Image (cartoon, rainbow, N blue to C red; front, side):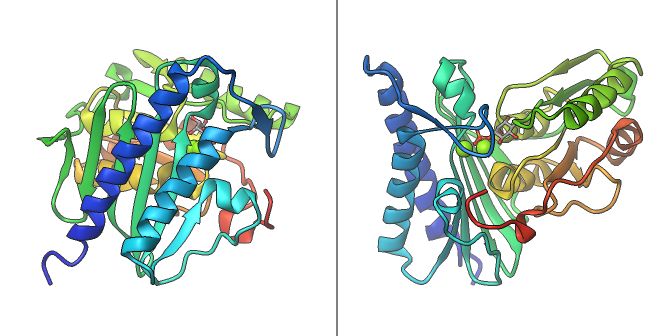
Length: 283
Ligand SMILES: O=P([O-])([O-])O[C@@H]1[C@H](O)[C@H](O)[C@@H](O)[C@H](O)[C@H]1O
Ligand SMILES: [Mg+2]
Ligand SMILES: [Mg+2]
């Protein structure tokens, strides 16, 4: 059964590539995107997010009718966010919707696939860079077919860290985000960066361009595919509280080395958003 999930992975790659074409086409279109909001006035969604997710799910259903789905926009429309042991496609149709709305050029389609709650493969397509990141459990991580390897750096003072601000704007959360950023920056590190998409940030860790990425407030669809790409490139995943990574906890540290991940955790002012597996529908 060595190639049990290879057909599904091949399908994910072609679905992500097709989704990327739809995204690029939408960006070329002169008509303005209608921008709607979800959990806050800065949590954006467009018709393209919804269209791409429908396209991916429809195409998967035709080939794999018994499989389950967790899709960002389906959950937003009231579908349950339930990760079971069933083969499950975890889809973020556009990771970096704010970038998409503003034509900031980092936009990803992210498709993870889990069985028995374990990631079997992850596909992240960075549409505007035309970079197809893939990983299959136990078989390494790749970008456009070239093997990926995390950075060998073990000194956080010689590192670049990726971080994001997320889409929560209450004063308490913003303060915590800034406390962490100030501590990390003053370690000091060489720099702090953020692509505006969790999936691409994780691929940057896998590629060795940044030593680590952390964020609190992401959802399972933001990090499912990227988490496997990082670990298959030799990286390490933790929760921001220092415990084992948990894709439902909405907290992630992805790093090249455990020593970097653990050092970073010491500087992060962690907090606990409502877990993905405890959230009501329509979040
Ligand atoms: O909404 P979306 O564009 O799919 O995903 C968002 C991006 O990954 C962003 O970088 C991260 O900061 C947010 O937490 C995510 O929600
Ligand atoms: Mg996302
Ligand atoms: Mg999205």
